[in-house]
Length: 253
Length: 279
Image 1 (cartoon, rainbow over the protein chains, first blue to last red):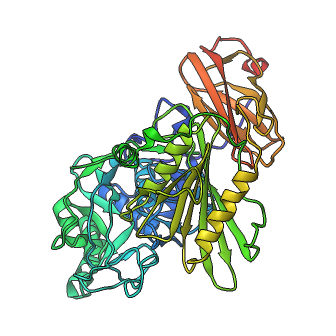
Image 2: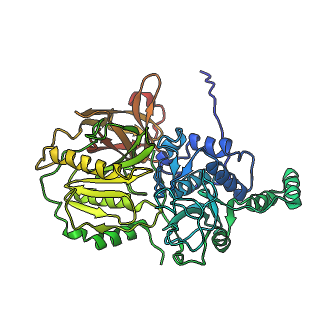
Image 3: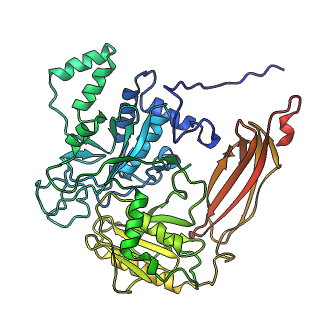
């Protein structure tokens, strides 16, 4: 008897590492996650791992989500990433924190085979003016629960009631230790002829130009630890000093 | 010094003096969920609920506690408040860990101190820098947090929840309490399955507080729900012969939970044998 079946084949850059598995069938790369990471995030056809993760960062940051300006609390489990709730239309609501963004970036980058790992950084410290996911320019991230006059996103650098990140989480590549953070964007550089040139180079197929263009626009992608901290951390004030630690990551179906 | 969440949990437990908390002995509260309308807070609308992950990353066993957050809003003032209920199915130990982990899962730098008063709960945790109330009454942990314009609402809600907990009849043991979901059957339709083969799962739960939420964890295979031709839970064996295991956690509306598991032998494919007959 002849039987005709239909199959959908996904090509990824490498064997997906943890939290995915090739031996634990419950964690075989899900097609739902592959669709999100390849089709939705626009990584189809890419051969460059760094750019693939960068596009995941951009896609996660551009989701209809907002940073939790009250407590910085997780809604999607962070490192125990509630993937079904995320993919099912943000069933846990639109408020997220950095654990959720780091969990999402790590989960969807690794399903492509990227060597991304969830990193927890405690203590973190005060922020330079950045754009938390879904929010405006801010150097006082918990203005939602701060007492007046500190209930505003931007305050003076040395204001006593300014709030800081007690801790932070982001994704990091294990091979070159470069950071990828979808929880916030740094203040971008002014758009100049350089950006136009980079855009032209991207059109001509230069992947490295896309990385530079995204970094110039403030995306926190492919940054060495020191460059990352320079962009987001206000080290002139006390509170900083922690280091990122790789934490085990899992998915919660 | 770099710290993990578990390091921070240990630090917080030590600073709060958890080892001295007299919560571990019976009686216990047989679950809790806030009623649809809370006394004196009838203007609040329940916007959504959120179940927190039921396992720690990498763990194959379920947490003994269930944590669920209820998001409320008062439409007329736009005030919003989040109520998190943590219920342990065995004793108070898990409720303590569950509540403290919930408090630590936050980026805001927060300071917690043991409250000297027992105005609410058996043990209350104060947070001087925030409009929030956290407490434990026996095996139930409660956290109420201001999510905007909820200055008066937070203490009101905390008191209303504590009143509700005090009014619930206590029990000496949660093991066989009728409020707890009871897993009557959790088995595979067969004790053997071939590698890559599929076998139906039979799950039957006796429960007085629907709806039920369920989570599955499978080893050497996957557990899933087929939608066609009809809804059917199944286990699909992985590629290697050996022992498979499926565990289930069911949680009812009063946040009480039950667990069950079964083992199944996974054998190599036998040529000439129709694997369909194993279903």
